[in-house]
Length: 256
Image (cartoon, rainbow, N blue to C red; front, side, top):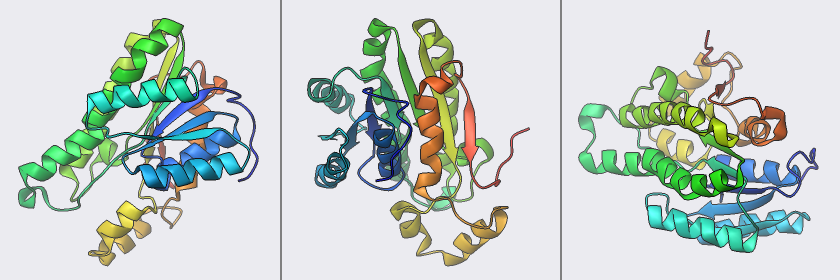
């Protein structure tokens, strides 16, 4: 693991969905910057392997099972992290799931799962950590939304709605929590190389090529491309930034 700037020396971070993909890259980056990182994931076995890799590199990490669709699971996970690593300073809401299909072909079962993981999961994790952050008078919350939530995305109607909801939810939290010295910001990836995207696109390779052509940098994002923006928002460098939304998309979207 490459060494980084120790901007987060000793701070405790929870990263949801951190066993692999974007969440893993974020957890690795926060660890190199000095954070103690909880790898919170529904797949505890893979989470343990990711935590072990961080520990082997000389940084602090633990694995904790977390089902973001359950508020009780979120509360239990936070309590365990605080026992193992200490009070939570940073929450990164990264866990997500999607199924690519036209809205008229989708089902209520799919809608419920997409909403439960992508939006209610963020609500649950925020509810679990915010009262503790308020009591301590500081905290950083960074949620991973998507450019789909800013401009829409074919075949991802409910997912796009959830990601747009995360943006609005985060801006409201930023207003409510500013007096408690809690910063709330959002990072929006464009199409990024993950196992989830590969699984979706195996069935629709033409869609993947069209995505690449639409990106000015002519490539998909990599998980590590997102990690630096999250580390910035988690650090003291972003103490005066709250309610902000940043796209990391190779120029696919450019807000005016």
